[in-house]
Image (cartoon, helix red, strand yellow):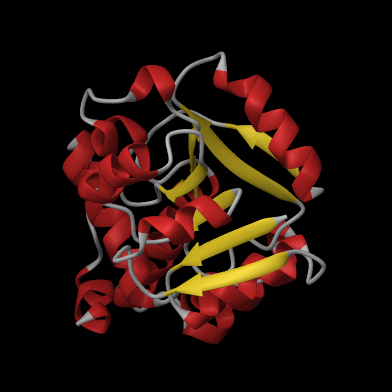
Length: 217
């Protein structure tokens, strides 16, 4: 398959690791693309989507299959009412380390889109799980909340970073401790997810640790 990745080099590398080097990979750092390029590809993974890009995908190549990074937004916000009826757009988590996993979290616009999603994931040779179209999806939401709680624990002087990481790995059998996870995801990305979740829900569970805020800069 011809697959276009829009993002940075890390995004491109993680896509290739996830789906395999046997595909024909194209890469672009932004959505400022020639319409001719979109006609050459079958699938797009856009790690930095915006409403204008969604509109251009519809205009330049209506039948294109596009995966949009919705870790910090939702499909509903990106579409904002236009083009849903003809879309082949899916949400996914494009945060570092979340794509290259056994199961890909995906959100859809309509229930009917599930048929097309099953077909494309079969071609991509990946398992998937449909989740609600919400900021943070599922796994990023949980992990970022765990990281935030770890920062609160550190702030209160209950334990050190290394002790918290070790306790979580031994107690829950997680592959990484919360601070190790924060480094892999990027502390700024963790901050952005928590901020987006709080803005969306106003739920005090997502209030961000002062220490985490400072580290995010």
